[in-house]
Image (cartoon, rainbow, N blue to C red):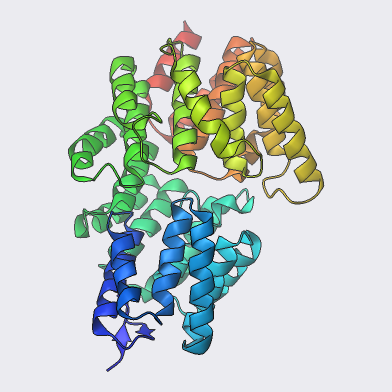
Length: 439
């Protein structure tokens, strides 16, 4: 009897137990839930020749920023699948290998082709999706729309109760401006599987984009205690609650959540989340006119420097430059700007020249040159999506432009930007800022 994955695709394993543990492991991986590693390791311990179990373990290593382990696991999967694998499984392993070995452009191309051939292969379909997926980090300015198009192209293949697909289809719509539709889809997925950190995360995003920040805070407060602190998204989901508190002006609550869940000393999150969450929270706190408690900037910088000291990833580079600028390290910002510029000129930096511009703007803002910051940011504002990440994460850069215009004497431009934002979604923070402009 054929062994099948969760969505009915055949698996090349001789063991029912291995197939069962593989299905469970992939479910846990796709829901960012603890236990995935143990399930997948039992799958290939039961059947050492089970290539897809090794491949899924490689993907999990990559998600957890364990590159050497990821490369070793995918090499093992590649060896095995060549001896005993179907066409679909060979393509599956090849796509993961490309992604793990840093060939992102080709990995995106092959993942899209694979999805056309085998649309129910959810692990491969997950690669282009999400805030840190292949679309987001492709350098495309319209990656939000690309994700929606991708999901809709394959929606007919998925059951109405497929919790994974509902989550990512909904998140894609919410990020692309259809917040209410996206929220409805995500909520369906979340209610089908509440032990799903990706769904709680996506729902927080959808609520943010719909202007329901307080509702997102309540969701996180109720849900987070049931998610083990070892979960990779634990600190990042808590970071979403800090955004809601800051937007309401409740600095004490925001700092309390940050100190308990987000700061490097307490978070077990991925380095990219820890660095970007800490830098963006502290920048917002300070830019909104609040005092950053002593030591927090230094703690964030001490964690970030070994993680992303070398430039190369646009989303990390923008946050590193903001952190370095806030610390007053003009030389570090200059080195990063120059290094990224060289990568852009060499054609090896997908996000392009928007990142060096953001680096220069961050330094100008930190040094109080608000007019200069606005002059740098305004021409590239429409290109900021190229750095990847989510709308909630990139909003910091829109805040930087808005505050630079406010403080640099460009009241009319600031008012126009606030009007656009308030037409997109309600915001108590933006309402306060508009009131100050009017006064």
